[in-house]
Length: 214
Image 1 (cartoon, one colour):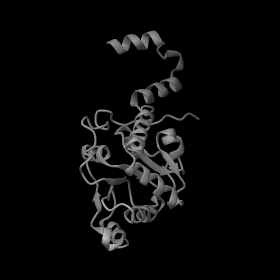
Image 2 (tube, helix red, strand yellow):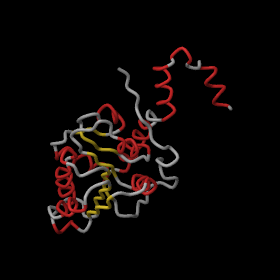
Image 3 (tube, one colour):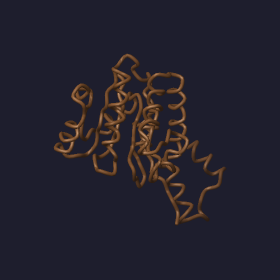
Image 4 (cartoon, rainbow, N blue to C red):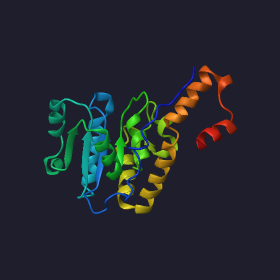
């Protein structure tokens, strides 16, 4: 058995050239479905706790989901903070990349993931990533993000508060996510497949260097 990681589009998912707009309202970003194993009620609770301490903070959720599911979930959000929760539904890749580039943090509390492409794309955009220590996420995110129990809301609130209030800590987390995202390139995926199917035909270092110059 061999594991070959998938990749992301580096022309699209990359840090914003001018950096995040520090004057805009900060927001947490989640990108995926609203299926039960994604643990969205837990995320809703974390956001409510953060808003009891931080007034100027939004929560944006994007992905493929039925409108009625979003409507049902928004009704469980305290009314006083409901106006700052956005369910955007499916968005294009360029719009997703822009959201990832500008979010204060990318949050992913899923209890079970087979891979987790959205956190990889968020890391490539330089977003600090806080995710569940569950499923494939510890292997995929590794040292690039902060991995916490999908049931420990106090730890999530503490880490997100630190990211939101400490610029140096946020920059450090951003640098780690960018560094980790480099593992997930399509070039590396191609090399990994070639090592499996034709190891005797894999170019040597000199040949690879020559090809890189062509």
